Length: 91
Figure 1 (cartoon, rainbow, N blue to C red):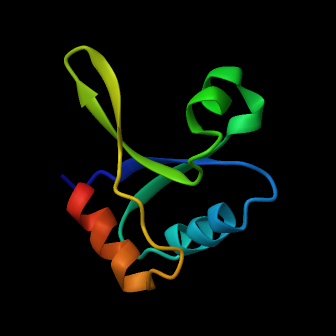
Figure 2: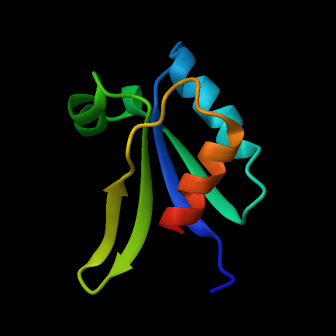
Figure 3: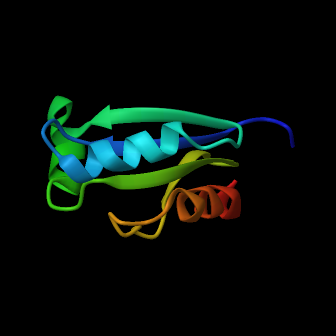
């Protein structure tokens, strides 16, 4: 499908790894719909991801509604090409 795949990045202010991954995701040349969610804005997000950010999820439409699938963690030193390859693999 030519539709942009939706990805969600759980992030928090002052998180250098989050910022670094966001920069790489915004530089991806594939069609990509990226939503960045600040975990400090919702208690449920904070509880789930406070020790794990950045967490990148792919959003899928399922019969039961929208499902978020966390992607494998990328090394902070991952090259742009590795980020693109992972996005492609999960699109």
